[in-house]
Amino acid sequence: MTTGSENETSIRPFLAAGFSAYLLWGLSPLFFQLLAFADPVEIILHRIIWAVPLLLTVLAISGKVKSAFTAIRDHRILLTLLATSALISVNWWGFIFAVNTGHVLQASLGYYINPLMSVAVGVIILREPLGPYRIGAIVLAALGVMNQILTVGEVPWLSLLLATSFTAYGYLRKVAAVDGRIGLFWETVFILPIAVIGLTVINFSGQGHFHESPVQAVLLMASGLVTVVPLLLYTIGVRGLRLSTMGLLQFVAPTLQFTIGVASGEPFALGNLLTFALIWCGVGLFVLSTLRRDLKPVVSPPE
Image (tube, rainbow, N blue to C red):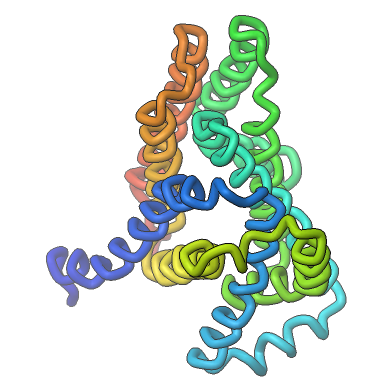
């Protein structure tokens, strides 16, 4: 029989991996701010090109190369990964654009909205049950967006782009039911030809930055690591933790992004504070709902 302390010890590596994944995603604006010398499109193209060999190495080490090629024989998985490839590209572009144009707070808002939007998708499409706490969370998120439009006078299009693209991405990846490493490998491979052609055009037109200095070249190459490492940590964490635990950890990332945005001196008036307050209250109800479900006693069937 496993004791509580032994069980707690056994999940520590998974908890550390999951937390580290969201920690790196939360701190990633600091890295992409170093790439402000390049256009967001150029950064994404480099991100794709350098991620592919890293992911192929990961698949080779984990013995999943054969599984990767077997997976896309299923036409449904192939078409789904083509769609997720487009969605994650849009999401990456939106995030890098937000960071490099001084809109980290909008990125943070988008990733706070994302899980609440996922709940709405789960109810509408997957017919998942929706309790009063989650209804309240969705309503508060909607009020936060409305406040940003009416009070601040700004449509948070970057936030909505990030939240919508990542929600759709998460839903399709759930439907595809393919290993995270294999999925990301094919998502990057599918757009690799576009990345190669795009960078060739950029460099021949004299707008590329890879050859300007060794430091810039290393930073652009490192974007592949920034893509792959958090995902690997995430896949480790999700194997050993409850999905609800990973769901709670996900708020580490937007909280760090919010802190970076405020520390960078981005505009944050009273209207913005009210927007975030409404979203935070929605997040609070979402967390409370998740905890209540986890703590709900399981009724054993009669023997």
